Amino acid sequence: MPINLVELPALVARLDDSDAWHGFWRSGPSAHQVWLPTHPADGPATYVVILPLDKLLDLRAEAVMRLWRVLVGRSEGRRAHDFPQQTRDRHILMLRAFDGREAGASYRKLAEILLAFRGGKANWESDPRKNQVRRLVADGRYYVRGGYRDLLHYPIRLFEC
Image (cartoon, rainbow, N blue to C red):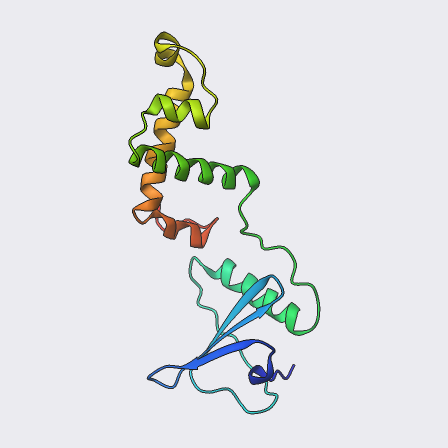
């Protein structure tokens, strides 16, 4: 299927020092990135996609299929690695807990605000939300200090713990 990469609407392209060509194309809600070792042809041309057989093959193949679907005028479909709503909600809680702790809030105060804890000191000592809020803060700290890179490959884990 011949494609005229240069004529894609709203394409942002640049050449780097080695004459490699990088294209960033937004089509509707999604963005697609293309890298070529040289400048693309001036007119329609046929391109070949080379995918390394590594741990990210699933994500790369899915990205190529989504790009192809948009280029031929079809719906790109749902991304297989979108976060489930429960995971998104947990990440929001993690960042809020981390921010609150960095601002000086106690774990108990965080549990009251984020997890609807109500009770006195005796209740706090035996409540499971005590450990839950500590885990939220620890996980938030992990993501803020570099763990956010793991989110780029979700659901694939590049390094096993």
